[in-house]
Length: 458
Ligand code: FAD
Picture 1: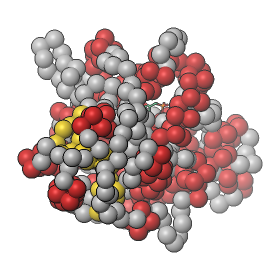
Picture 2: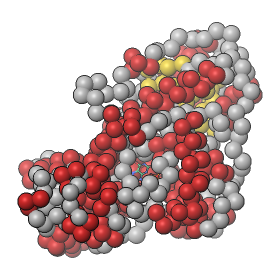
Picture 3: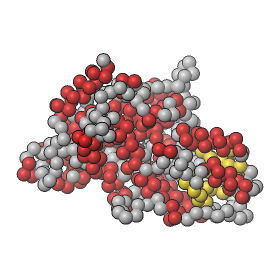
Picture 4: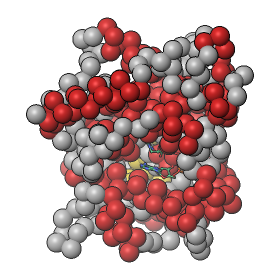
């Protein structure tokens, strides 16, 4: 009897333990179910849907090369998979385990009704494996990373197994009928220029980065330079596994490769937080931020206008606006600028981090429940780790320090004619070309944030 491989954010054939397990038991039927209801408020955002379209298309081609078909179904994932088990006479289902609360529920439900074999594969180590000496999970990154490093690598990447096709194929939706890409207006031109989804493109991107890994330590904080790996959407969609990334850097010594490995561990760390606190991205971990005097865009016109200006890259702070426009145009933002833009929304505009988290969720091609929630709470200081709230980033000095002039020129064309010295903080109104004035002065914003913080602490 055939086995169903249930795919989610694991659209690859190599180092895919669910495929290996299924292929060892019988012919394989790979299935992706588009289920918008299960995730509730967390259904895929617009940018993620764009990526998913490309990734499914590439994956469909990839499995065809192995004589298989990718079966697409839409609706409740548990029901769809169970229907397919009945239709095909499959002996059961193999899948890589996912930790978002809606996936955990679906896995439990499905496991009660069919032979569901779950496999670890999207993290360096299964969340929950790494614990303190007394067996409890880590809350803080540094000791977590130290403990995980002692165990790594847990295994080598798995090769693509020999796979056989079933005698008959069940029916499949057509990908195009899902309308995952934008229609009119077509906002994805910048996405198409910036990205190529799929397993093959992910490996090309990794190979390219391995050559540059040495310079990572020096370059990763400079948004004007292509110094980071840009692997995040590929990792998010599981087109490549962190084990493969780890393995590709094997033997590379030096601070570049070490720092990069530390970032990949951040991804595991974030999942380790979700494993402990499944609803972490939905509310502040520290109580003080739940009774904080946030400016509420639902109640105040001026807060709503500030939020809109931030979303559209019109705050009057060039580094923030460049980042927000890069995000809107390409579905991705440089990590240093994510930190600056997030801090600006939370502290300068005094808007609850959850509004920002939601915007990123909808606009990032790498939008990840764990990474996004954990990083937003980290910047706001509301999370399990250290309280960063009183450490207020100055966007203008960050912009100078990390040499963002060329980056600003690229994403804020109104300012492209300005010299390096001026572009971080364009004071001369005649040369602004319609670029907006600052929504709030840095010093005033800083004082407002600190006094709100003192008030909330009581
Ligand atoms: P590189 O620097 O090349 O890092 C390699 C990989 O390590 C990344 O692809 C990513 O998988 C992982 N990584 C790097 N930094 C982090 C980090 N701080 N936390 C967790 N994993 C990390 N990353 C996402 O993948 N999805 C998100 O939704 C997301 N939201 C974020 C929101 C905010 C406010 C901030 C400050 C950061 C967020 N990040 C998120 C983390 C980070 O910005 C991106 O992973 C990184 O910019 C992706 O670019 P890269 O692949 O070139 O990274």
